[in-house]
Amino acid sequence: MRRYRPTPVPASEITPRQVYLGRREFLTGAMAAGLAAYTTPGSARSLQATRSTYSVDDKATPFEDVTTYNNFYEFGLGKDDPSEKSGAFKPLPWTIQVDGMVAKPGTFDIDQLIKSFPVEERIYRMRCVEAWSMVIPWDGFPLASLLDKVEPLGSAKYVAFETVVRPSEMPGQSGLFQSLPWPYVEGLRLDEARHPLTLLAVGLYGQTLPNQNGAPIRLVVPWKYGFKGIKSIVRITLTDKQPKNTWQVVNPTEYGFYANVNPAVDHPRWSQATERPIGEGGFFGASRRPTLPFNGYADEVASLYSGMDLGKYF
Amino acid sequence: MALLRSGIARRWRPASVWMLYVAGLLPAAWGFYLGATGNLGADPVKTFEHHLGLWALRFIVLTLAVSPLRDLGGPNLIRYRRALGLLSFYYVLMHFAVYLVLDQALVPSAVLADIVKRPFITLGMAALLLLVPLALTSNSFSIKRLGRNWSRLHRLVYVIAGLAGLHFALSTKVLAAEHYFYLGLLAVLIAYRIVRSLQPRRGRRRAMQPVATE
Figure 1 (tube, each protein chain N blue to C red):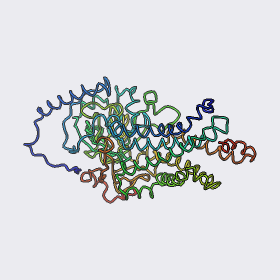
Figure 2 (cartoon, rainbow over the protein chains, first blue to last red):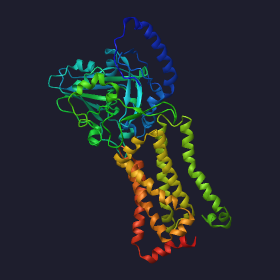
Figure 3 (cartoon, one colour):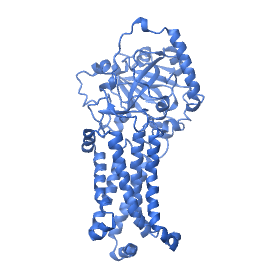
Figure 4 (cartoon, rainbow over the protein chains, first blue to last red):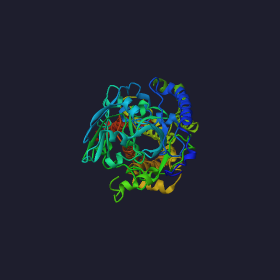
């Protein structure tokens, strides 16, 4: 497996934008026609995205696997619950409140956000804390772009995120056995939040996010375990205190605030040294492979944590 | 159940035990077929591993349910108990084999580290090892030869059931309805034994009588 290294691209190799967009339109159109029909009927819209140099070369996990195998406890505990039980969820209309230690707090409509920031396609590795992994072509914009818009104050040190609570549309949030306290919350240090790799995704595979993947807007932090990628965000708050994140609250011995992908620090119940790539065939296609420090993004992000004991701040 | 006690049913009894083995192994065969043909979802190895583990637990529950069912006036299925117990063992063995071969790709260091360092895997491994002497002494020869010690030895099944329940519960991030269901069943079945052992001996002997006559 190749490590991610951003390399300067010679001007001669850059496909002209119009040619590229034309091909993209054709591909996304064909894909939307073929796939949208049975995945998210009626709600998926294709997105115009330019491919980012922040993408990895790895082969992307098939669309079907990305959209039928994931954790989203608001819809149930099974890996297929999100795709099977998210049909009643209404991702539109949607607004995100951005508040706290900012000069210009505000409430942003999802359609406005998609129009006001150039949407990029970023092919990122995704490593779940449960030791499986995918490669996902996200469409979105850097979180830093939104943060710039609200102008964080000098006192702000952290960013807190919050998922929507809608028991009537999210079956995992109602009933006898509640798996987690709602709302699901997450947090990042401000420098992590401003890192160019940190993405607010509004789509995948060139179309708006399916409900099961966190529609209409979610966080993607590719060097951290997947649970940091909070879904269906309704609120972002700048703060000077380290925010709580749901999994750390539920089980502080197993999940930390940082949750950086680290093969050297085991989960108490399993090793993090290797991972099972999803979507590589039946029993005999999927073999384990080594997990990379910071999920292969060490060159980009290791400096954020220099001098820190990563075994202690896991 | 009247049918089972009739003469015709008696003639078919040995066959019905073999049919139980065949039927009991069908979930494993079906799961393997789905996985080998790429029809077990995005993470077929994990799914198959969990499928086998869950069926092992189901057969342990069924094995433990045989004598309470009989004692409490239900059908006497004691002749199927050996098959149910052995099916539990076969499923635990397959569950471990899939973990060893398909999940961990036979990397001994990874497997050993898991068994030593992860409590839920340590417990599961202990349950598997404890099942081995029970499976080896499940034949009629051993029952005759060991006499009363056979019953003593086979009380290990309660320890195994407890280990299996813990292994199941500790393997997940949060407990779901499914976990409460199986843990509840195991708790009731083990509690029944404790209650029964506290009862006066005469009542117990009467309850045990059908075993002796079978």
